[in-house]
Length: 150
Image (cartoon, rainbow, N blue to C red; front, side, top):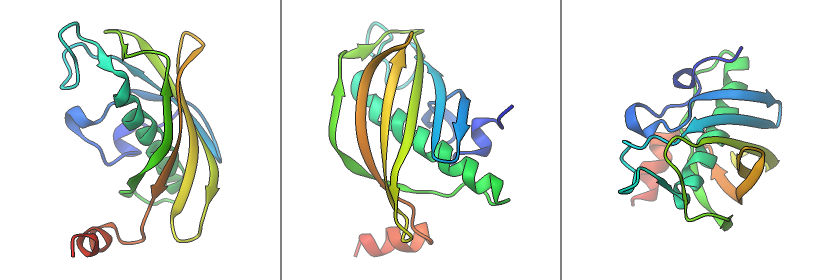
């Protein structure tokens, strides 16, 4: 049994898009989310635009980082999504009520906090979106953010 998402991510309220951890290992995680037809991202039909998938993938990465931190008796920390070179999707949107499974697997991680992850979204066993995301987890998020604004 895995802890609730609120214990693994710093996201709260309507910005927390994931429901629970399905499976995890030292370098990968699989999480689940259900498309909420009443969420801030929902279109007129209650669907989630596929581009929100990048945020789902980023939150999956954050979940893996949160699980690792928890194993070291540390709280979850904030990180930054630096971007993706390619995000491919086979759909324009994910329908209201669809069950999504998001997988993230670490490709590399540097000691300075820079990392890359391969990520995908599946619906009923079919891969519907894929990307490689680059992320950064600075030792001091607040200071790094302040310095980036100068």
